[in-house]
Image 1 (cartoon, rainbow, N blue to C red):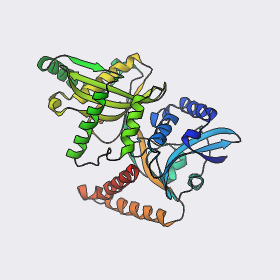
Image 2: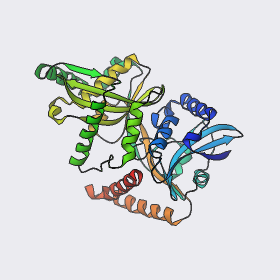
Image 3: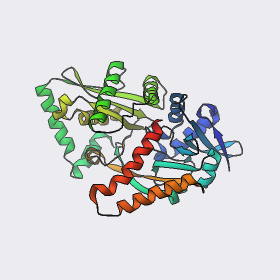
Image 4: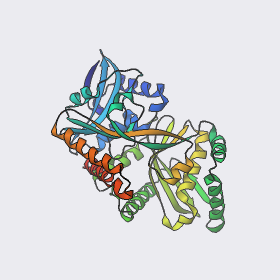
Length: 360
């Protein structure tokens, strides 16, 4: 098996078809973040940025057997589109043997960092340093089947949302849900609300760099059949109350950018919009609403399935690998101590640093 490094825009028609076929054959890989459409969109958005978006193509002769995209900056690599990407994985047929160190050698780097690697990827298992939970709504049995599962699990969230919906209609007016909205005004309002939320909560403004908005606007404008962005809106009494901009794959909707008008907080408009999206999916080919990683209460209450994602790194002997090893050493030592929030500080610092690196 040979490894060829190709720019996303340089993938052949046969390569793109092979990539899509590998995704279609494995439901675990059915994520828009693992599709060729994602890495090509990231390449378009980051043309003027420092670093290159590349795809490592595993070839058996001329046939492509696996794909691994990454962004290469200097002597390190990270997920293509990080920190805007929620998943990373080797898209390949089952049983493909790969030494990940050969992968980073082919990419020409000393170290590959990952934050949301699918934890069932055996290739990277020896290099995983910790795991987290990613939450999903499995709607393969339809909304009614999903709601029944949540009731059986003891979750009262959907019942509470039904009450909030009736209250909103009584106090504010009619609720209007729109899927595949083409409103540029609502899209830009979402960005304004999201930036205000990030600032108010002391989080890094992901829109401080130009490529993230370029990426989102590109995905909003495109009409590719199996990949792209989709805007969902919720109006209360004629006023925009919540906006979601999600990614769509062939059978999966992935929750991505979420924002709402705080004036409607008492009605939980963002959650009402999630509920409407889940109902809408009954009439579509989409079977999974992926909420991504993060231990937020609403994700735990909405989800009826989860998957594990892992963080870690693959390195070859170098100062850069030693530095990452030392960072994880401090992080692991702190997290093993019963120091409350202090124990989490090294991990938060590493995540913040990686976020800044990705935004550059």
